[in-house]
Length: 294
Length: 63
Length: 63
Image (tube, rainbow over all chains, first blue to last red; front, side, top):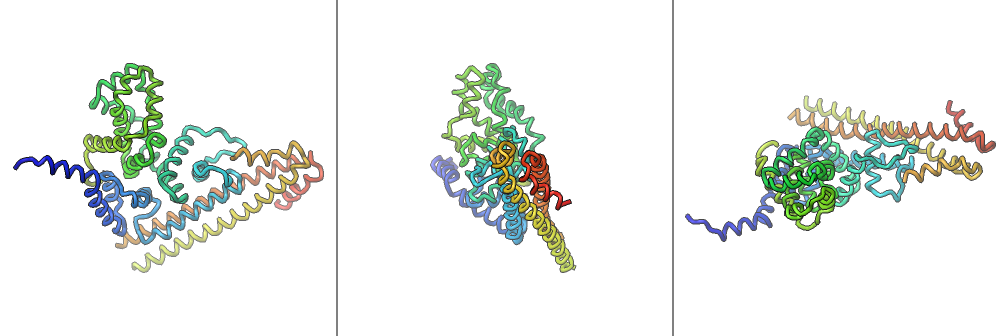
């Protein structure tokens, strides 16, 4: 039997554009008919495939525990969530933490602070700290992805909390991990970054604490967040790695660390979809494609 | 036996709900109280020139 | 199957409870805020002679 390059080309093409997408969508629809929903299968699905956009928010809500596995409880629980949201907004308005002109991201921050019992006293309104800025950044991105304000707040809150609980301990190790994979993929770029003193100054907070919020446009970002929400923080390393690889030529030409940082913090917004696709491929290559639990 | 478990669950949910409702009533009372106090403080503000500012200032500081 | 019913009930109870907990946090905040505002009003009272009385009067009424 001989290879048929034409056919390979075609199937590769369909894989990217449509056919595979249709199959994936069907299999997700089957998973979503389960009652109770199988969280493990849903996680595995979103680790392997991009979530179809029409189901993304629903799957995120289930994976983050905003909605319970039993579908027949969804209406009841959604009502509770909405009530909780409204109660908090109302109280913050009465206490004058927020008004009708407060930007929604700041409303979400105050709500989150109230629920975490760290709402600053009015007399001590200090400028937002690093954690607040991370929260605001994630909020701004989530707001672009999610239309409904109640869903948006719950997704931000649960995303941030789950990320902290699940991955808080792993975060300090991610820069080393990035260094390791960069040495495998492009040792020359690693030596260059080290030589100019840029390595310790890479925008790790933007990449690993904000999960690329404010770095990638939302259309690309949500595909990264699919992986984070379904249980991987390693994907963040590979997105960072793929950004470095994609702009290798530019970065090799910069000899000052602040130049490197400036470029990476304001990286071009074209080609980010391709960067994410390649990052996911690399991640599957090094960490394996999840078949069962992750 | 299953019915037993279900009715117990229902009772627990109802208990949680009434706890919530009770707490909500307290909140509403306190909110009304706070609103009244704010407007009182603000009404007094013009007469006591400088000392009136805190209340107004707080609202501003929060935005 | 029984486990299933139980876990469903548990999830519902947790969601209801989370709403209650938020309400409790709100109550606490409102109480703190009210206390602060009352003490502020009372501190200001001496300077604004007549207009200071309502606040004092209310505080008495609560004791």
